[in-house]
Length: 392
Ligand code: PLP
Image (cartoon, rainbow, N blue to C red; front, top):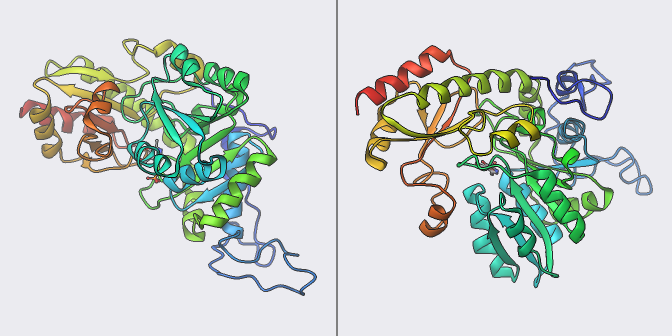
């Protein structure tokens, strides 16, 4: 599939390497240095901030290079980077919401996002409705005069339910409110939410953008100066910043984003097709399979299907757990989007914070096995799963 073009006239593969990065003016070092410095010495009181930096909670040159790259890759106005994907989500909520406001969140989102909205936003007087984001009438009906934003995640972790971003943006646009979307699972290489009308894009950079299981980080890309000012103010006030070391490692990771995503997605499609034919597998979810109920939307809205697959084995929970315990090459772990293949049980791991009733309503069954497919040889990945399934 063709990578998306961004808005600076260069192709995505060029920008993932070069955007935001210029050789060090003093040494010529080709990589942006790790500016591991807390404070920045000022030339004079009147010339305060003359070189653009004061204190690393307010801004740091290595972090800025990463932010500039993200702005170009998403085709947005500006970016702020964070100490985690959750810190990014928290900064958006802190910046945009006040007591008495209401927000609408897609009913399938990352478990930590659910937990923050359910347990913290409510505590501060923000009302939250979790709504089936694939049901546009339900989304429209959920919006009230005090609704400030709609939060979506597509494909949603872990069920891979899709949200029609353009249709939701039309609803938020008509209501004059902000559409925030988490683009972690497909990244700007496969999905361009600003072109579909979203206003704020959230990333857990921990996932595909790093891709090497080396960091925890986050980013918020916005489409306007007003949103940048509000969210950056929340970040500096709450101190939710990304460290220079994480920014540097993520700058290196992003250089190969397209190649990793293409390989991982090709592996994911092959595994999904193989699982669908396996006699011990009951259900498989992957947006690239024609059997996925939203396959047409996946084709229309994105240029790739991604590296996440889920399935349920015959007999449900116990055989599923046995399989996850027995595989060798697949790591039983949290995280996704890495070069290493990872197998996860959302019920006990990533989505343990979601109450059973909500989990059931959103299709996160107790036996659901989540795969984040890596870059290993496909034959080895299949052989390991095959051994695990044969032992059931
Ligand atoms: N968004 C999605 C889709 C995620 O999967 C995750 C983490 O798994 C997050 C956000 C939170 O990111 P982090 O773990 O970097 O805080």
